[in-house]
Image (cartoon, rainbow, N blue to C red; front, side, top):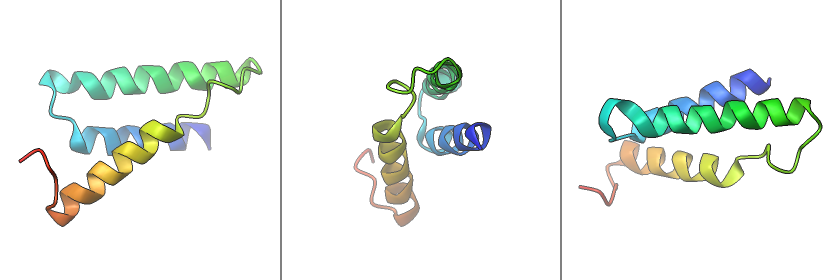
Length: 71
């Protein structure tokens, strides 16, 4: 389940990534993998990327609807 959520969150990030060679997506993925590792060590406080996930989701929705402010 954790791997699947990392995959979905990374896909949402990738869809809106405008950085060269998708650097922002790879940085995001790296942070999520570290969070997943922390979850296994019992450090749950830093393992929930909800703000970033919500931001990626809303940006993707705006892109789909054609209402993105970055035009």
